[in-house]
Image 1 (cartoon, helix red, strand yellow):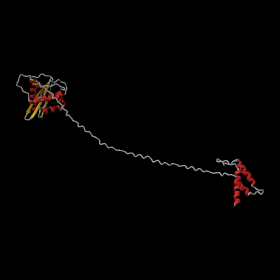
Image 2: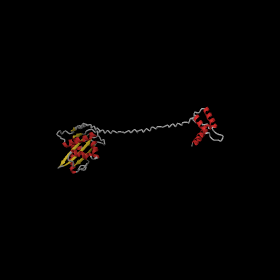
Image 3: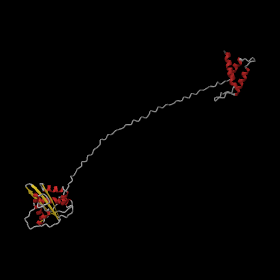
Image 4: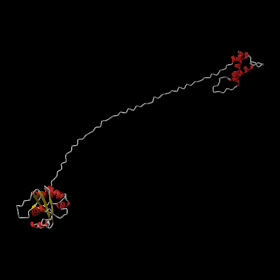
Length: 262
């Protein structure tokens, strides 16, 4: 066993001497010591090629062989694992429910005062005869008022109630009981009666009605007829300025007449 160990160490020494070890970590042996070791090793070999155990022992004891120390530097890399706690943002939504404020403005409505100016109708009664005791009927005066209101609405001047024309109209109202027509009972035109009452106007027109119970109903009946309405309002511009209004009540049947003249 001892012999085996000597051979092992000898082999190691020969390998160390024969090879040039190039390494980043050099073994610190002095050149003089290396040379002396080689010399002693050679001297220990006998002529028979055998190792001289005594010489090897002396070599081992006298040679300072530095056994390289391999320092293993273990670099411990400490990986700091930082677990970043995620920032959790909690969105707090504050819902503010505002109760709508309803402002009710009390609107004070001032009633609109509409002032209606009732047109003033001036009825001028012209008496053309010398009979001063002649009296116009209330029906005739009411119809004159209604006629002039209608005329005023369209910008026409007021009519004048004429005595001679009114007497002729009253006579015509009585004739209507016998014959309701613009032709007189004797077969002549209504206009033939005018001269009997001194009316000399050449421009004239007659409208007649029956069955109406009041002046208002009679005027409204005439206004609903385009021909009769044209006479009252003088839309044909014949220049009527005066009127005779006749009325006759025959046992409850009322007859109405208007004769317009210039």
